[in-house]
Image (tube, rainbow, N blue to C red; front, side, top):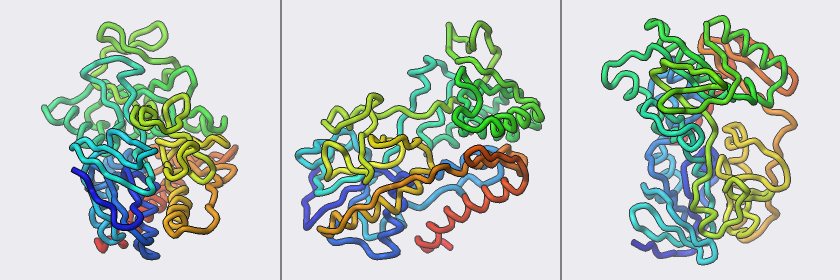
Length: 375
């Protein structure tokens, strides 16, 4: 199938956090001239920051979701429920999983990264990758409850903020069943890149709820989960939070990519090889400076991306740069009403941080619900 252009066409590929910001801008300030087409396989977007709270039972299963279909309609964007599988940047078109070819004048890509647990660890029927994020909650329920099984031992693999939060969340979820939880942080250690204080607080919180910490790299050998020189078996469920890999199609299509395959962008979030294509979120990698691929930066880059797309479609105006703050505030939930607040060298653990995280997360979700008329 082919879609004809009528005026300038902006193609938004993916419904990630940055593109949510673009659609919100279109709703608030009016859509720019031309057509906006959103290509995404999902009618709803799930906010990654609320996934651990949903796992722990703090939120209902639909509380951390955003109605993409309603938001796109209000933004004046056409919604195509499909997945991009190829791009021809010089010919300004994409191909989709369902066989469509969609032409564009400008394209913005915010599809997130793809699962990499099996690539890193190996194959195992017990393995559950956090990605794709949109289906993680349902896949977790199927693994643990679909067949009436109750895991006796869960291993969470990955020592970053996401892995730490999930370890606390599954400990809370299965606390009444006496399920053991082990966090395999890897040789990089717990909360790599965070301050010593934040790491110490996390270690103390893990000990408090009897979550075992293993700071050695995990691997699967002959059906066994091994870390260092010892086995961690028996294990009933392996939850991998190892970050994401880049899909192959951006680089295969000719876009400049980083060594890991992520789309190489400049300070304006533009492709360094094809400036009519922009990218943000986990799929993008800045070339002028180090910007961690995290939800914090995806959310904060959304308004800058919206401004730049509006100016490109309008035919004028200097583009804005996304300038991350010197330090970002991270709030790592410990699933007991508390969270570890980390900002640079500062770190603290308490209920006030848990309340702050709840307020930030629910306020962000509510802002889209209000835009789409759901509340």
